[in-house]
Amino acid sequence: MYNILVPTDFSNDSYNALYYATRLYKNQNCTFHIMHAYNSNTQFKEEYYGLNKSDNIDDFLKRRTAECLLETYHRIVLDTEQNSLHKFNTVSTNKPLDKAIKSYVTKNKIELVVMGSKGATGALNIFIGGNTIKIVKSNIACPILCIPKQIDFIPISKVGYITSFKHSIEKKSLSILHSLITEHKATLNAIHICDDENMNAFQEENKELLIEYFQDCIPRFHVLPYDKTKAQTISNFAQDQELSLLAMCYYQHTFLDSIFREPVVLDLSIYTEIPLLILPTKA
Image 1: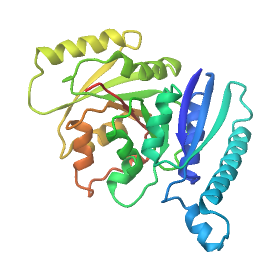
Image 2: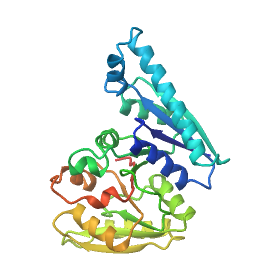
Image 3: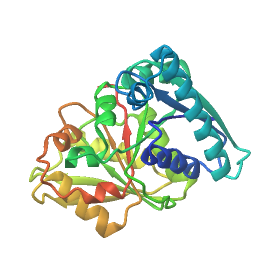
């Protein structure tokens, strides 16, 4: 039984992330935990003052959250045709979203967090969304699957795993990627962006360990020449190869951080079409 946490702000983007997750794990036993954190920034706060309510604001926010969670529950059950393998649990909290997620992941043995992008102004937020960036940087010990905008579900057939081979292989982090590839009978494409340096012995060893870990998948390796930016290099490759999922481990001050810092003028349109799986690490 997989435990999957899906935060929601009741937008179309967040509902689409939930629906995508149910399709991705259509044939597996799962409990989907649908969470809404109604902190001081919740949209219901404006609704409360607009209606000039006389009751306590905390009671109002709690009640409106419960109502919307119930609506979401009924909608997803209907849209998934009452899949007997799936269960849904609704969760409301008045904690900040990042703290609520970290706490819930720990207490409920969550294997995956699925989040939708809000697609706010700037390439950074189009990429995966401001809330997701904050949660990733909080070093949450759980994989995060980022579903961009309102993309349609496409069965996973080609997976791109971005790696520099500069870190030891962490089998626990890669386990969910391995299970997805196996479940969907997908091909694995290891992507290494060339920075004009030959791989050293440690990198070669990590490459061999990756081959060993994914031996049943027979990974294909791609060394990509640097093209303007790493983000653009990956974008071009993903389009050419028609990848259906990108994955990478998150290490502070390395590649994923560098994408966060790249200028927002980049054309990151590819990331509005391909889900991104961010894997946690010990480092």
